[in-house]
Image: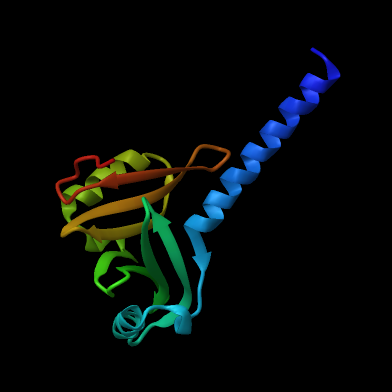
Length: 156
């Protein structure tokens, strides 16, 4: 392989990595309350009552803009996502495993096996609620994510 070909390949690879990073940065960025659309500001205020606001982000997915408020309520995380009109899109909150439906709890515990359940979240989107568990497994502590519905069926 010639030196010029190697340099050209390296430049193309570098450009590809830079473009991917730019897309990621465009996809999600930190934002301030005063930079939110007025309807989103109002929705954030309503949903953050009694909570500590940890941060705000603006995300772009498939050309649509969403705003996420990262909250802390009684020591637990709650992420609330709104569309540009202030409509609630999703609610993701940390929950105790004992508070979720028995079938979901059993499926998560079975998936964990001898691993340690780090965090369980209730995720509600489009009227559907799923339960997402973060599990540490193995001697190196590899993290596994398990999602199930209320009946304990796996969800992608």
